[in-house]
Length: 272
Image (cartoon, rainbow, N blue to C red; front, side, top):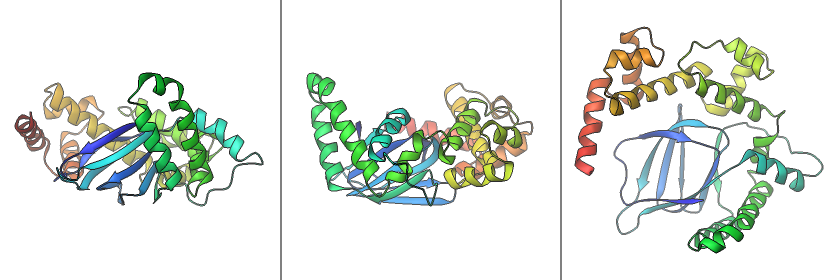
């Protein structure tokens, strides 16, 4: 577990990846944009992410006097599986919605355990011996709560959530290559129509949209850190058309590639 602290709000969306995790807001508020869906959460609420997702986020309430504070715990699918069979010895409950992100009220017992875990991390000996026990407590309480049925699907190999997670892993590893949706559906043992429906339900994106976001973010990173020009960056992530790359880049980031990179560098120089 680690703490995320921000002393000011974001004027612009911050693009990044959320991995399977539990996030508990202790103070302030935040918005997360996934596709066309917006998830807002604040103090005493928690957000659960079940699969790797490309999101844009924004801290919407924070100040130097009362900074945004969020506790984040990564969710290990293998550990979830072990505990889920103990919590649900007669079989996992069915899930009505397979969304990859959900927001709910933070159970007081989970908040209490998370606070204790954060305090343990200050002492190396306590962290080594006691922290795993508190993490297990948090996971068990999470599995027993309203979001438990969704979390339990993380490690269940036959669940649609687990299958989509496998597909996401493949797309992330091969984002710069042409995508064959039918072959990807076969890889996770789904029909093309079922695969497309479940993929969108979990990620709020189609497989091709998910790939597009990965390509554009990697191109942005290459232009910013490796000083690649627009055309080279686009080709390197799989675009054959420079105009299509620039058009889709502008749609995602709100600015043309050259303008965006110049503004990012200017912002970095002001804050360094």
